Length: 308
Image 1 (tube, one colour):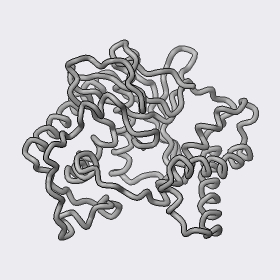
Image 2 (image 1 turned 180 degrees about the vertical axis):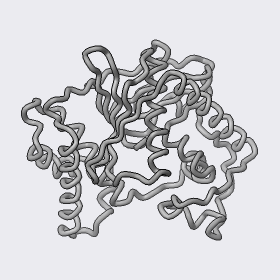
Image 3 (image 1 turned 90 degrees about the vertical axis):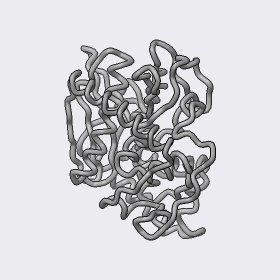
């Protein structure tokens, strides 16, 4: 299994477990997904992090979760066995496992609609073909997969999330790899994806003292690779941005003022019925719901894939 992440030299909290005690100054936690939510639309952040409104997974999201699961399991096989056929053979068993662990996924298709399920699995297998077009997993031995990494910044904020894969070269150089199952993005989506990877790079720099040499996005649908190389000065500026973002979240929470920020991303939002932009009314603000409770910080993020 993957190595356990650390916080200031201590073991980080693990999903579903208590982990080692965090520094007593830590008051809150933030993941790249929730940080990106606030940047995209403060009201979306509120709906997800404060109101905690349920969101039914879409077929596209479920397909992405499935492909991530297959690619993680692929590296459990001996190197020579990591072939396209072997990956294809993992699709159906991994879907069965996911449906068992996450029953809400079973509701994506009508009961007995075997044709829809078969098409869903076929589309996932096609995305795996895109993966093999850009990488040869027989030549790779990832250091970590679906790994929870965490760090404390500004003495008070725990930043954490799951990275898809971490490769470590013989000279110690780090490469963070993130699988994207959509097409190569327009500018708005690419900025969000790089924000997520810079978040991970900052955690790795703060916990291991090494700036990742490469942040790699693999766009499986289009079989494209996007590489980005940060430096320490850039990550230092990014750290200030993350801390400032959290301060803004704290202020919005204190004022109970999370305003919508309309954009092209509204087309994919699950909460249009409650959004003033679309004529809706948000629910009453929770009486006692900090933006990111410390208890949530100490238990870690929900599950792998939550920050995808």
